[in-house]
Length: 403
Image 1 (tube, rainbow, N blue to C red):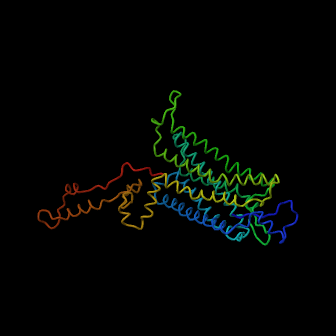
Image 2: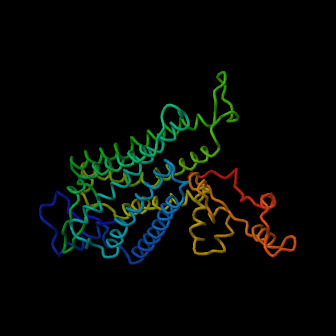
């Protein structure tokens, strides 16, 4: 991550070439080669895992109409947010780490910081939308329903609100020159502007949504796992909530917990930095970059965690991934009972896949080809044909098809 080397405001003269060597080590700019290699390898691995995992999520949901539920629209939005971080933040952060300067120009400095603050905000509001959807689906299923149109509107509003809240990044983050180096600041300025704005971002983009998510899921968990009978709390033996929805809630709880753990250090460090800068502890760039790089790397790991959670907690996602990897392998494709080898119009309308039993069909075909009553051709016998007709199997008790 780009580390600012702005001189403390108490100094009226910029550092000369004589004392630059004393300033930069104090700011932690001169890192060892081992540190740079470790940071580079870690970020490359995060980038590869993030791109592959989130692209796989989008492909699985796109290919299977059975997975295109309202919840999965939110899941795709989370994947797009992680992909935006991977393509618009990670490569530029890597270039900053390797070159120890900002070489991408002033406009990209503002754009990268804008994306860096927009995506976490959009993610938390999409998670809040999922919590609202699950709350009404499970507790008040008849009073309110989040349709696909409403889900799309909630996603658009989440992104627009986060983008508007992060728009001041184009004003606060501009390239700075120090000792023949162009650097992109990483912190907000340590004055009343930075304190007020960072406090607003922390409250609106992090604290309030997290509190609402916790309250909503608390109500949902209480409704699922306990029922009140005569003032006593009983185990969930008579609760009518389907087991598939309970599994979905468990998976979403893990997703929210991982977001809370991975992005909390990032917001807390920014807020603590601007507050301490106002108190005179240090200036905008006078801070150890090791802590900042660590928090950014932890935040980037959130882009990798969601596909892993889906893989562990959702069998349908695993099945969709296996189908994607088996598309070029016809043997694997035929042996998979979930693969759609033939689809009737009824199946297309109701998203039902049929697997053809090749052994039975071949046997039936061979029997029908045998001559009857000494004739070379087979006579038309409707009843005989009806008896030999093999119905293709339809799985009646399939697993839950929603992520």
